[in-house]
Length: 256
Image (tube, rainbow, N blue to C red; front, top):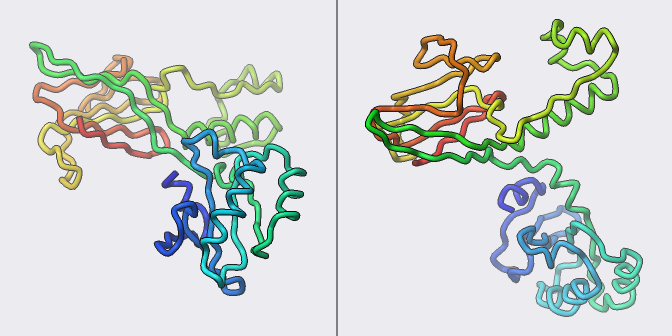
């Protein structure tokens, strides 16, 4: 929800408005435009229906300043668009224009931070952090875009950089889409542990780090190995923070 609000151009908080309105946009021609955004955590508000419209007309709009003549109402879905529009036309006694906007057009631009599931184990040798699941919304979108372009027969920068990839498929004119595994660990290229600093404002101190090459082999603290990464990183000291970088270069830091 916080990310979503930043994607609506010009939307700012307005303490003078009822909490029903997420904020307002200051328009040079129309003046103050209160904005309603459904709470995506509440399934009941995702659908714009006659009862919600009635609430807007009977409760929310009458509480607005007298000079407000235009409001913006975002929705995820409309129960019955014809019925909603008819109700608006027949019952909008205040004369305030209600502009309906599809929130899905904004949601397409929302990028959620990478999600990392992990567990920490202590042993005689020290500590082991195991990453069991990795989800990257940004990478998922990029991969989907790539697959769609290739499906339509369009070349991409990835094709130009890897001319030898999938020679059999290319010879047959077939496209093999990129598929991410259930745990998503192949989307990670770098993992590091900080055993000195726990505060997020402190500089990062890399006590242990692992880089994963394109074939999945581990480069541990700068030394190449023939070990395939198993999702773990170990340290003798107690790890305080975990840093994970995905293959697009986005980094996440977690306080352990």
